[in-house]
Image (cartoon, rainbow, N blue to C red; front, side, top):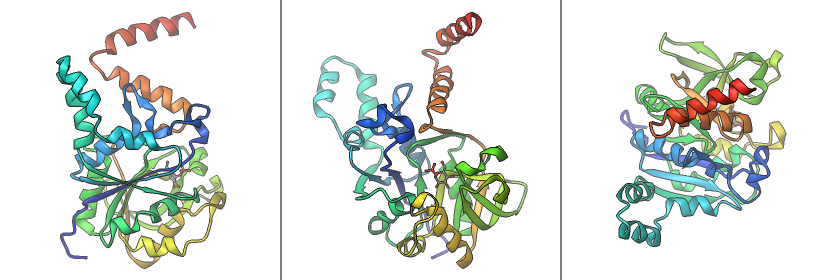
Length: 294
Ligand code: G1P
């Protein structure tokens, strides 16, 4: 890899069933659940675009057609809005289809996150690339993908976004073992473990759903056997990658919201609605009445 390799492509896995969010996910992808009025996956694409990425590959599966439609142009709707002079709405929907070149590939069987990323091999080729999980948004300035790319630009090696989680919750995440390199939140990784028991966890720094990976990960994914939950785990391939070349972690500044979890989903909507000028005042007043009458 030359010294100035750039991150030009992002992969967004969005193929899972969303079983934690049934019944709404029976016929609707969880990635299309709204944050107030914007699907989660649009927020994820906007994070990649804000990091300078224009080429995005989504890994989708059965029942995910509405994701494709969301990022396609809708000429009928556009002409309807044009006729009615709804300029703001028109710009809003045009922006969705014009902000990036979005490609799709199908994961034929749901065999885990590692298998989903493997489906990106032909599209990504031999370049390092970003991965953003399609059901997770991170409120950060600058966006986490941008923060990770800055670290990548320095080391030209894989970088993974890390979040501190309570010890009791480590078994929900991939967990890092490594040493801090500086006070800026950068770690040199020496191992990863997917969903460890509390007593096995080497730290409470969890993989937060944002990665910059070198293309060598694909060979490792090809030969990766099933791990936790009998799925091909990306973390297991990363564990082998770290034995071959350096890998970094970045404890980023920002807050992560996992939309696949119902309580987090409701909280996230309230937090984002309270940030919006058009509804913050009324919503705050309403919430106060709710809490009082409780
Ligand atoms: C996946 C990864 C895990 C990571 C998590 C973040 O797990 O396998 O390493 O910490 O995303 O949300 P999942 O939540 O898909 O079980």
